[in-house]
Image 1: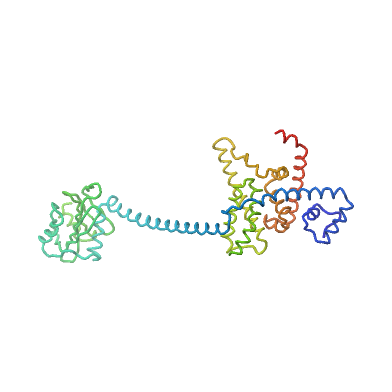
Image 2: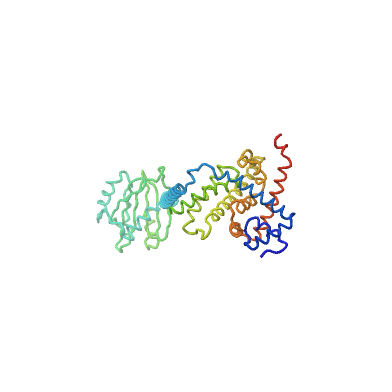
Length: 250
Length: 168
């Protein structure tokens, strides 16, 4: 296996006892007749022996209980549990953040970015889709006014839209961040619906300048009166929309 | 599980010795052994050695030392950059392996110290060392040869100036 004369690697392998028994014997024979090489090898052997002796003391250190495998297992388990717990907390936080973030977004949209978006939303849920049932139904305009007055003192009178063929038919109370709101649905003989919406002013007593806003198929005319914000929501494609706006004197 | 723990317990003194020879500082060494054992225990189910447990642990410890060393050197460079001076040089901590026969060993490079400890002290085979370092056995042998020559020269140097040491 080894070459003759032995290579540097062979000599190291001899020092490290990594030669086969045959090669080991061959090397011993060679070294016996080559004292110069033998001296070099002996120097390495001495260094190795000194190193073993010097480092031997490092094996006698007092034991460190922190390094015991059982202790390390316990620590690992504790840490992974804590890791899982913090992962769970993170998930919950993300979830809450997501939900509240979404709600905040909607609230922002409702209050500031899009005036009277809640009036439009209520119209969709109540008048268009019929998801919310009516709290009060009547065919009489005065009864509807009485119903509204129970909840809103000093509110504007219900607009008289009979000139355009619309009469109040049902009312629904809704809640906003700032308090109760109400929507009164008017209907004409063709079954077309528009709504009158009353709500408290938004945060910081936010009163609206007179204005109008279109959102999809709906048009909201809004204004502020004593103590409340008002809107009339009209489907934009309604043939009588123009006439209604004139009636309302917008 | 308990059998493994017993095997590990038996090897801990050797791991600590290896760690001291790398870090030259007993408390850093024990931190290194601890992270090594943590890593070994958490990796055990996925990947444990078919052969020598000792060689496997040595390789984990060695790699972690190199990573930490790299990080601390990066940190030291950063510190130097911000403070304008180099705080990273180890000072009195080098006294751990203070015996004179180890002073030469202490001056070798990290890899040379690891090589000599694995081969001369722990008696690992060239093949095992090659696996740890992920190099061919031929490379292990040539690096070992250089490490031995360096140690020889440094030891000779130690012997030739003992009076200087005493006066210091």
